[in-house]
Length: 148
Length: 148
Image (cartoon, rainbow over all chains, first blue to last red; front, side):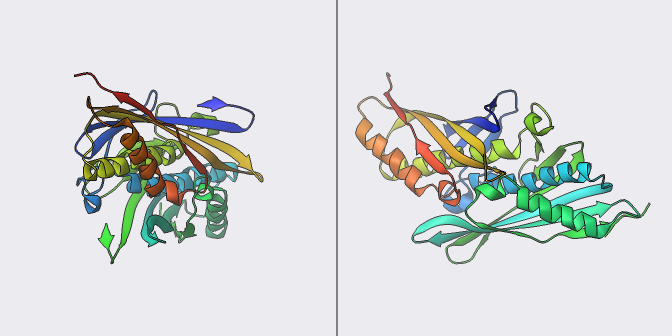
């Protein structure tokens, strides 16, 4: 990671090992096994580029929300989310056409669910991965007030 | 993963654990620890959404190339590649504006380097992750003829 006045550079490596399998690496981070997915004649049980592309926007929504929630002093006890990416043929080539993000947020008792919903919407609008994708990204949040 | 005549759905989960850290999951695959990167007030040594976004296109170039090389009966002994993604402010919001892919391919002695280069170019043009990104993706391949 290199800083040049409000710009950042991210470097990752990939190395083929055998069949349709490889390993991704980044300095100081644990290697991750990756592969072509089964539907494209690859392997079961290994993270694929498709999975990681969809996961990247799922994580980014969470990390952007964490930053906004901190700034707004919103108290919550849980955040989990799913992301569902649709890959379709567009003019003869596959591309992701839609990703639906479904974050589930559990607030501390007494917290403001409306404010929490606004922060999630703001997080999606400012999610840098979402902003870097061609496809439509939809947000379907669930907000629960935790007991305690 | 679900098939509906030439379309595929990819699902991943994310769960916040503590601070700016979480875990991503996909059915039947090992969990991966993820976090906000240090430059956005997160953590060192953990995969970030930015890393995984850049890694996804790096892997996809490799897996697409593996498929094309197999079909073309190209023999090679090694493939490794780096991807470098540039994150910049565009109209006040961060987004990836450029990713440079640098695959290094080692061919079996006697193989055709020109044909290999063409297959890499074709793999980039058909890379579904590259096709799903807004940013420019550049290819800078290195092709070596291996000894034996």
